[in-house]
Image (cartoon, rainbow, N blue to C red; front, side, top):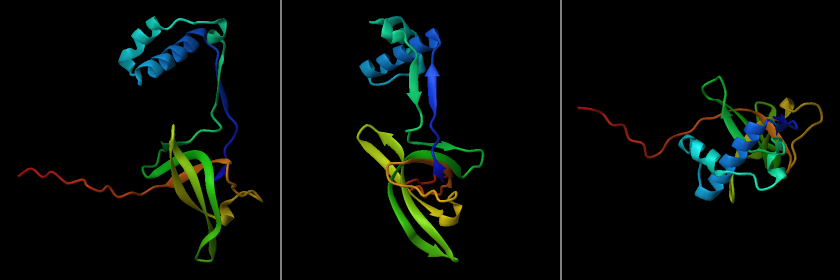
Length: 153
């Protein structure tokens, strides 16, 4: 686990700006956007002011996300720290911190996952704090409930 770097992406190509604005407008109006809606969205959207075609800046340093890595059970993550419990667990002469991180954020619902990190893995004097965005890799394991095997006879 480490502090999330500041990342800003800029969309400055006029065609990409138009595509971005058109698909966003379509999703707001219809509640979703699919690839099949692309032509209709582009045809329907017209800029209302010159500012609508200005470069778009996206701050990716304050995002909540979880993504797969090249290893089957590992995931990369980035999110906001919502709770920190130092010295949460001691095992094999190692102190673990519990750091609850928001990994999925949807309008008024968030999914925070407790991540246990060995204290000796923090860089230097840095320690995570509430409100800070962090990133890292984690190993996830889950049990799917309610799934039944369908065996052919």
